[in-house]
Picture (tube, protein in one colour):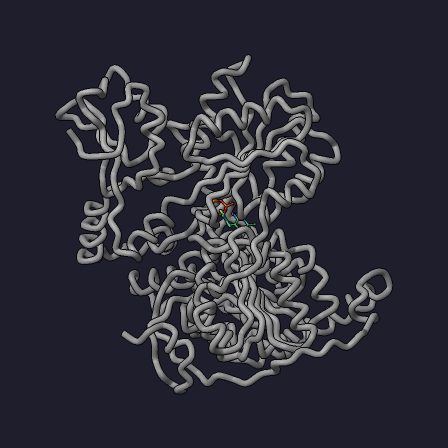
Length: 639
Ligand SMILES: Cc1ncc(C[n+]2csc(CCOP(=O)(O)OP(=O)(O)O)c2C)c(N)n1
């Protein structure tokens, strides 16, 4: 197999490669001669930065994990203002964080090509919600492309760079979970040489965006968007497959287009159904949409997640003579579900219902699905075996039981700590959005809630958006304990480095920002760092912190178990396993290690009626030994 690094840097035009959409976007950025790429981790787009980091040094590209999405967009877009090509990458909720600068960039514009890649998560499988980024493109009034395949992702990202430079506007590329992670054959193009040295030209009539400048620039942006409409019309985008006889039509985009096209094939309706594949989510192809509205009797709109195209089509139909346009079906009339991710199965069954054509069953495919479902055991969400958060939240749980009301209000945050909300720890009360826990804890304190109040936040999240609410808590003397769970990585999204690690996106050693230094510099008077793998030490530290009158910080530090596993694998070293000494285990009479603590490496041995430890999962963190009051768990050989 050709190494990915070679595929990414290969300049042989026409060469074909198997790439994931995220890798195809990375290749497109390389072909476009990008100079600066930033991003913040988040499914489904993280692999774009990880891919570019592999070749950043050899190609002279600045690739970084920014501290958050807003900073990422500010860096890359200002590099583009200086004339070099920039790209930033984030997941959909990241665009909320970056939206402040996004809303202004359309007014200032850029000079070098600037592409913003945003990955949506219909269904919110790996996110706090399923919001639709196409609405941001509309609100910011910036062009947005939406590919359905890796090849299209490459083509459209390249186009986005070119169009951005032509219009002097940043361009968005939207993917969704299914598209981002699908792989396909991609034909590589030439690697362009673009500007490598930025120039800064002072121009307050453009870059001092406020008041009359903002008014004038808003007019300018509207003109640019008119031009965008004309340019996009002239490009071979938004293919419309329409024959005169076709009275039924489908409008679809992204992954939803793939489901719709497959459904048409399954129902054998290729000759009867017109198809409009929307590739520009903003501005939408009005002329083609109107043409389809005029020539068909019924239209089904298949899109994720909001009925954006559907509503637009409805609006366009008002511009057509009454009775001379198709009836529109979609989410509004219940033809398709209004929420959650679509799938081929949903689309084909709803389309079959709408047309009255029976679905053909593909036996080979359904048998294969069944076989996979049987082979893969169902798995729930859980913290990993040996996770330091298990120690931290077990300590907090024990402490909560000792408080007057037997409860601690623990406002949680985004990341692995959220998994401590699940049984058996059940010790994190909430999870909203990145960095929210600290200000939410302050909110409870100012509301006079008569409970000990904790905000639990991960290390990457603390840097992302935990610092400003901590300043607020200090200034307003909020009586809250901030528990920073420092597992030395951004674990949930795949172990990307953050400012507290001392390693860059490309693996180089960098200046490390110590969380404890930051916290002290902000003015927190009570600060303690504890070992997450020492339950008693962590318990006592949180107890002391909660007694402090004012904001306090406990940094519970313990390396992510997955890193320990990975390093052992790299070294070829076997990890020792803890064992249960069954003669000391009280079995069903106790079960604290299973019912209260819940490390997934601890299993129940039905035959012996005792707990046991699965050696392939254990990383010897030793937490369970502290939990067992009968001293039945320890390192060494099983008896
Ligand atoms: C605004 C925003 N950006 C990115 C994400 C994706 N995300 C989910 S969890 C997470 C990592 C949290 O890392 P950390 O705080 O270190 O906690 P850990 O998972 O390591 O315990 C990220 C980046 C998100 N949910 N919201």
